[in-house]
Length: 203
Ligand SMILES: Nc1nc2c(ncn2[C@@H]2O[C@H](COP(=O)(O)OP(=O)(O)O)[C@@H](O)[C@H]2O)c(=O)[nH]1
Ligand SMILES: Nc1ncnc2c1ncn2[C@@H]1O[C@H](COP(=O)(O)OP(=O)(O)O)[C@@H](O)[C@H]1O
Image (cartoon, rainbow, N blue to C red; front, side):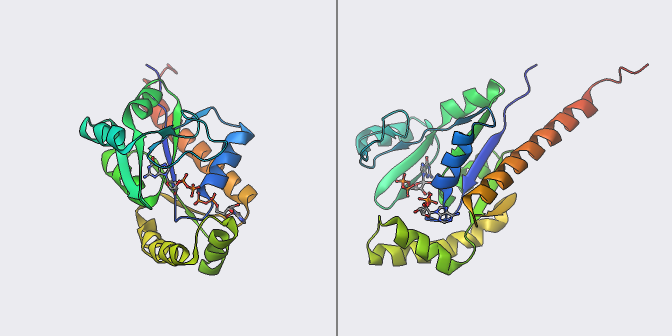
């Protein structure tokens, strides 16, 4: 029997650095895990490729996916839908490979309801001033939206207690090593559990 892959969910407030940390983890190429490509209705940005960065959908197409139960979770975020295609997640896990989701907090909570056996990692900012500075420096939002994102971040940080791990994103390098160490230790847990279930071969 193939050992099932792990479901790894990286989440946290907007601007904390989820995308940055996820990209750094994948460009390191240390582990053989698969990134779950989300579906979204937001506009494709320059340089983004359909089927690589996201599956870009119309609202109608996305709503069909919801109706047909094709999404593990979805949310409406700043006026656009984002969701995780369920098929790919399930097939990857069944094939014995780890799947990595980088999604916002509401979606992560929906996944936890459906797949509590996953590993849930919450990325935290060193402090709230630094979170605001990151959102401002990113330069993608006007100031009323920045205020909204900060208010939302406070509510989201309250949900941290439902996660298995909290990782501070002080430097990208530190956060990447902590996330990789967590995944390594989750693998060890699974291997030990499987070994303990094997019949004793020593006699
Ligand atoms: N719930 C959910 N959130 C997602 C999904 N894909 C991306 N996100 C989150 O949606 C938010 C907006 O993503 P995006 O438009 O790419 O903006 P950016 O990451 O802020 O540049 C980020 O917090 C992502 O983590 C998904 O499939 N489900
Ligand atoms: N450890 C870090 N130290 C300083 N700046 C960071 C760090 N991680 C991410 N950033 C910056 O913060 C901003 C938000 O990061 P991003 O990955 O877009 O966040 P999220 O995906 O959580 O919304 C970006 O400008 C990014 O370059």
